[in-house]
Image 1: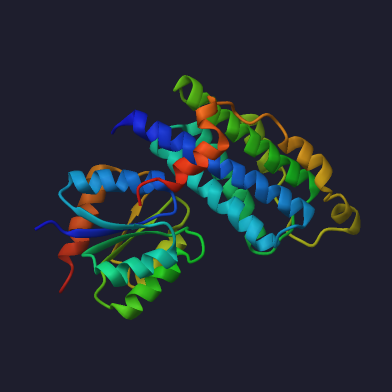
Image 2: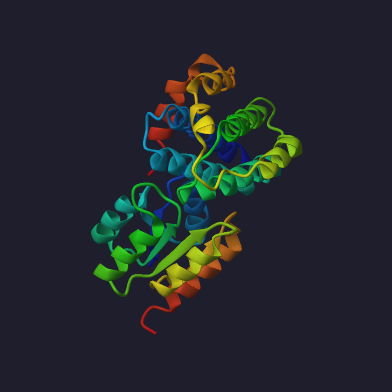
Length: 124
Length: 172
């Protein structure tokens, strides 16, 4: 059974790119979110196996959304999407409970590798 | 990768972001909007354009958006910008618009704007409160003039409103 993914990014371009990469990799996209608030709501509604969470988003940042998701669902499997130059924020996210991170621009093989490893960590 | 699909997404979304950046910059200059909100909009939109452009190997657009994003960073911490800085940001937005137009009209990667990047780098955002003279220089008029450059033209069906609808209807 395909693993279910929630994609959160304020850029439709990036959501579409992740959707294509993950769908090609055998994942099912159950929801997309365009800001941190939507991401938190969508997580509560769908309980996906994996969340890709952009760090820079309007209304509620990826980091704030991560903290809320983890607080409500400590086992949540969240991978942060970052850009070069956001190392400090990535470290903060990892300390807050993110499983891993992907640096933009996305490389399909790397995205799938990170997704697989993050999901494999569930239950460890 | 379906390049044509992503090229279209890039043009649509970057165009919308650039309109929002121009609006935020005008509001920042005129004091119509909270500086925090306007600066946050400018920062996020530049960040987003950087990521999209990098995904399509449009290095010129990605580099300029990256420099602009970095340039905005001190402003997010509460620093203020002088009129020359505002003009530079307006010029960077216009240059990004021309790059998006280049992609839209020719499908080719835009040409770099090393001159503009150098000027942005040479004129960092102010890090302290402006003098009265600088504050009074934050007049909206000259900035509005800069931002009233012709937007990149597309067919009527791809008007601003069509683009807004297009963005709103992106798959979610």
